[in-house]
Length: 545
Image 1 (cartoon, rainbow, N blue to C red):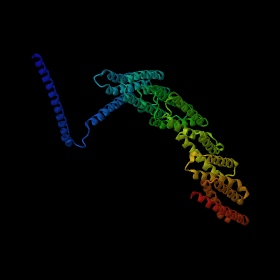
Image 2 (cartoon, one colour):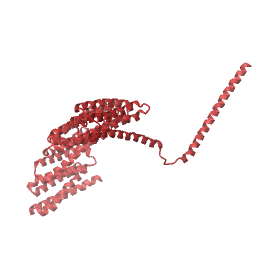
Image 3 (spheres, helix red, strand yellow):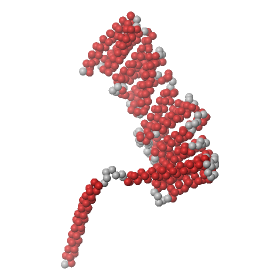
Image 4 (cartoon, helix red, strand yellow):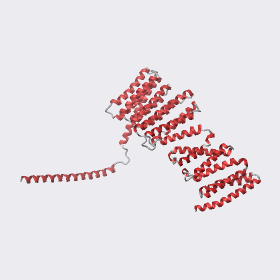
């Protein structure tokens, strides 16, 4: 009996647990349906365009501390300026108040642990700005110590700032510190000793470059480079004497290479090269630096300016090659387009426009066509970036029109020989593939014919109008015959350009200007060429049908 009772109790317990399980499932389903029903009923009552309080709160909480940073920083700046303008207190006491103010804000950022660290970082950033301002103004405004001591104090503040960066690990802390630090000397508005100014800007460049790598923030290096190079140049805009200009050039170059080294250090340390969008963000800065440096170099030594620019260009490429060598796992770095675009601008301006003489420029067009042919033959044309292709295309176009105008106006072998060389190399290039001009063969051949016609015009000019007409006619017959024999309709039809020029000359110039005998021979020759060409064109048209 006891055994039976135990079995009954076990069965009842199992039954009870199953019933509880079923009830729980039923309740859960009811709750789900009830929740869905409540949501459906609640949704229509929500205003469609009601502002999101969280978003508004986030914007407000981001704006207010930034405004507080501006207020604190301006307070420190006006504390310095009032010290000079009104003679308030003594210089040492005023400098001490500014220093204490900066230390107090930095300390609050460390000690107020009940406040979130990211929010405290605003105070820390303001403290760094004021401490830099204190070290700077102590020499510039209060004359309490020398420029060397001021730079040493700036270095000490940088060490403290480095510690703060590690403590907060906030990008906004670094960004606010960077902006405030660089803008402070501008707002103060007093000319500083050049050594002092240079020392502070170089310290800032080194600090923000290091912090950028450790915080993994490209923004900091980008922002610092724009502010550092731009503001330092702004503060030295009045410098025009050659002896002083060279110092500005040296400091600007040092800043640039510190920031460039910072970008390289970031890529190597984090194994994270620049992507394309990040790289192209540096292009305006590079162009600004190049333009301003070339202007200053031209003031100092106009002859050396383009050569120094080209040497600088080579250094940039070496930095790129170094990064590429150390990041072998990537086929193409994102900075490739940036570097090639910058190199293209520098080579075009300093190399093509400044260094190469006019007697050498006339040979650039045939050399560019020859280089294209060699690259295509070795299947390396695709390795060149779009920036280089645009640069060489621009040079080729400029030199083409320059050659054309020179051939029309000048009887000089200096122009005739390069033109004929261009036609010869261009023909070899076309008849051996010319992959780069696929779909543009007609335009390419047409421009080549124009150049050749002008070269022949200049060659035969001294022998009279009939010689020019005969030479043009023979050239057009030669083109048409070659196209006919090779069954190349594009080449054959391209002769129409030369035939058209020859016909216009015969019917307009020769008829009205040439002597009677020359006029008759010219018309007979032109008519014979046109008649024979017409027959061959009928045959060419049958190929397409």
